[in-house]
Length: 84
Image (tube, rainbow, N blue to C red; front, side, top):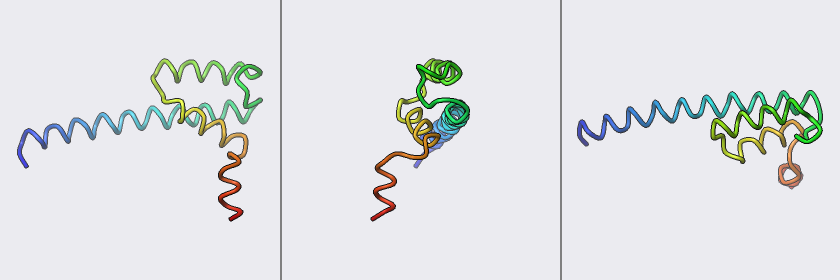
């Protein structure tokens, strides 16, 4: 391809890796906060605080929801899929 394309790929790879690390960090924090208390942010102030920080860091909603579902014990869809 060319040197220009190689530079683009290198920058994109570095940025994607950093973004992935941020998402993973917040996923673990949200999971831990939801596991310690209620998985409802209205009842769990530490979870609400972590979610607010995650939103400021532009973490997608599906990452937040997945971490909360994992702390609850999984979503109903996963349970149904495993049963089949």
